[in-house]
Image: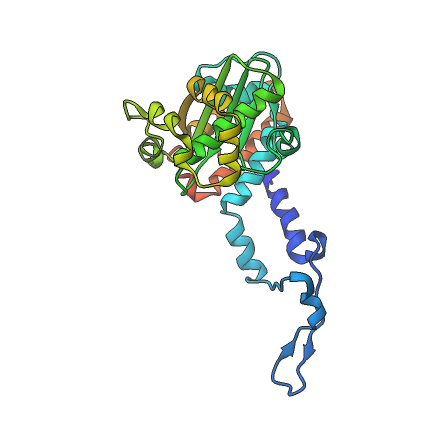
Length: 286
């Protein structure tokens, strides 16, 4: 059993024991006329909500196995554990960036890290990887499309990181998309437009109506524009990422690095279980 199934097992514990995330059960009480049941008023006081399971366990497990949310969880854990060499090969190399020093993976702790300049959350990033000389960000897509607004959010994220940790020699952005979505993503990001950046940076606030982002664009225009002018952007596919994982797994197996082999296999298994990744590359060993 690859380790990614353990993530699903943990979610299963929440399915059966919702009290673990602060949800309380309500004892069934029949209405006086016997026609139904009622909920005590105090259980809904203070704006509380009422929840019920929308699916049987079998239906829930079958559905969640293929969902993007589970893939996000698996990759977030794995990439935080993965050695710098793998992160560099997967996300820095396609940008032509050679990282110096160890690569730090920054996840949800970014809110506290950037709180001095961004006290209110303005984005949820998929990947933020910081080396001594570079910042690389990663946005993964399945069915959803991207936008200039999202691009601006990532430019802002990198600018905040430089304000906290110092300016870097390189800033990069990877979009990880299904093979069939490459052209669409290029269009959404205006990559084939001869003058896209001038149009965006002349008036970036025209591309968003989100007040937290608008505030940051107004407060730190020079820093954010500097990132946008230096940022190298590349689109890779889930097949590209899969090849990198397969190569790393096979090299780890050949050298007896069982931990790295297992780490890769869990990611491989979860991506293969997610149809919307649109894989065209088959792993002959599975």
